Length: 398
Length: 121
Image (cartoon, rainbow over all chains, first blue to last red; front, side, top):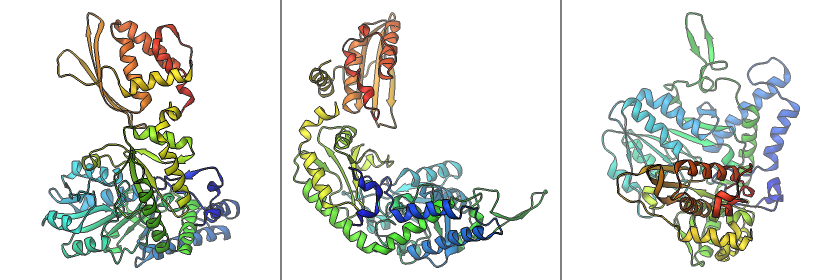
């Protein structure tokens, strides 16, 4: 749907790497160009008209994000440079001061590096204990498995809403309920989900939510951290400097600005925030539920068609997210990706930053197709046609 | 070089690599070469006696180019002195990086003389 809005799609290209980043529609590009062309000034700094216009535009996006993820207050929205920075803020700005030695943090082996490595660092620093919630045979996470592993020492569950290789949608509402009943904080990596289905942090009882703008039609360089207000009150800024302080003295006295401004030191990515706002408006114009249903349909169709090819192994047939992880039998995933590239089909090969998922999948590398709203069944047909001829692969890649 | 012949040589070494499989024996130098941009992950072990390369073994996961090149490189280096081996590797690297190189000492490795045309390799 809406293909005409995406300048990149005018090229001879089938873009199936939306899990890595998404293409940008014209309204997003235009909003950023408009800022740079017509009211390019800093935020929160000047007493002239265009400066006020910047402030207004920037703060309006906070409200748009609030409305997009359904949290209580726009002050619970912090702009970061992406989901990675958001998760690092949670771990080193909040958890580091709230958790103690022996406290358990539950992750899964399907998590992206950005939801594993900060915790492993904290484990080294203060001795928290990371435990991995067992996954089912199809690599998905169930409420039952979470229930089985939690103990009185469990203080945090930090998981992706949709995982970036398996593409399963986690039962967040039930897990959130369980967390609430057991005084466990729920941290959610929404990088692969907020662009693809409706998000409601209140309904899911999410304490912290991290996501990136560029995976949801927005620009690179901007992301969001949502945190419940009462938790943000106890979070320490990780960056100190202009914009985050109310006043400071030569003797070291420092008073922070309010929440969330204290967490946004330095000049923020203004054009990017404005672009993110345009992306949210664009997505809401289509409707998140409609996008989700469309992707479910694409995924179903892709599996149905790919299954007809004998030498293709699919690793996540049953997950509902718009991701297909596969290999051509006896072909290294990078060779398969280069082969598809020859036909202008963009897929990603490798471990997709989920480097401990190999313990679960029993295979290190896969080709990953990740769909978005502008992909079509015709593109899937072309992929299938090319894969069917893959006995010629080495004529192409060598 | 004829592209069909080139492809045949590379494919043969990819599908039936020589000296694949590590051994549990003393007297070997061991190295892991993990490339995090292209996800190749190879273990290599080498036995040097009296300055001569007596044995090289490898194992791991890598693409067609990387696997076959490892196989051919091992065959080329076996029996060479350490200095001769360094010279071959130096010339091979020059070839890959489009610099001047001595074709004669590379033997079968010259099947990769056009690999630079695939920069995403």
